[in-house]
Length: 516
Image (cartoon, rainbow, N blue to C red; front, side, top):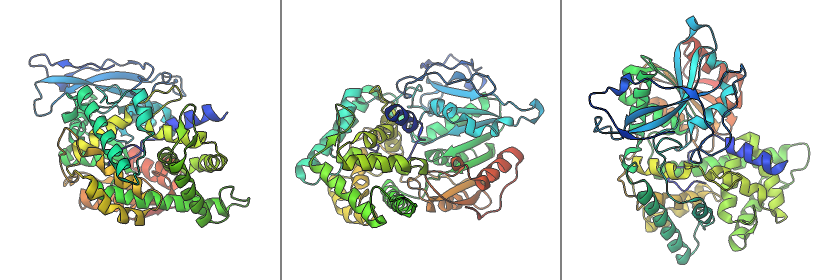
């Protein structure tokens, strides 16, 4: 799992690409005097191959109709408190609407979460999933500031990250606790050394202001928006700051805006435990024998024993690295983000019991943003930087130790990891902004808020709290009784009909609608 106080998922593109392989421009500068950034013209061109910070790989394939994805760079103030000062470049991508021109609504802006996920690489990877929305919108996404091509936060290099992710993130004694604290301090110091200029300016409020500038540069009176995971928090903050400019908006896989970092991590411990329970029940309920346990309790007990064994003695992973307890825990968590990956979890566990840790390590690598060439995207660095700039609380080892019983009660498997991850911001060089985000948006139009009852990373209860926090008449909650992180990508017809009805035709579903 990413070493951050909040484990918020980006989408699972890397998992699919790396597993299939195993198993078969942006600049800064100073703003010219008196130039209004809202009047800038974007120079849209065919997209280049993703940068290493975006995850690497090939340039996006053409759209199904043969059109090319287009990319551009938008300038924004580095410091929104000094809008006449230095600027940074924000990387954008779009697919122009393919429907009748007179039916075009505007741009639909996506943020897929993280924080730290690259929208420039994610949108084309999942573009076909949003084909119906393209009939009336230009599909647009971006790398938020500090992410991908948008002045990325840089901390450790690839070799250092390999070592960093091999550390024991669930210390059992004082020596291991000291090592974890030392490694966290080194990571944070490297971030400050390599990215000192950008670190104070990657808060969610900064990204929300960027989106309002983007709205204007794209030529829209309102921001039409689709936020997933952390993207729901970003959307909520935007609605709070600019309620008069909110258009049709959907929040899916909803972050609970009322929680501190500690409460969020505890909620995720419960969410991942629930997802593990559901995986175990699903495995043993199939007509064929479950290869990783005879009963659901047996499945979970064998996983717990595996992790204890790996804590004592790792097994071969992806050469030359070994599968450690921490890597295995991350791999299991990554597979729980989507029911589509449960089969990989079963295969990975079965192989690990036979001493082969490759599949679980590939899953862990995908979670950490490592590709098969050994290069890391900057999702971990950006994730930590944005969370630590947002979250005011700072926790020390003694506090975390006192909280371990509560976290272990929430999840015997994930509790320790998520508790100790609270240390990631302890020595961060930038003060956190607040205990939790303000998303109250009086006067905004309805926002569709979708919660998934089986979501491990953004537990279901957060959707109702987001709807309440947005305010009466603004947050409209829809429940999906399903598994995995998010609802729209489940392909559930009821969910997709509700989203399409609102975004395409303005039909707001009834509050309390349930899809199963």
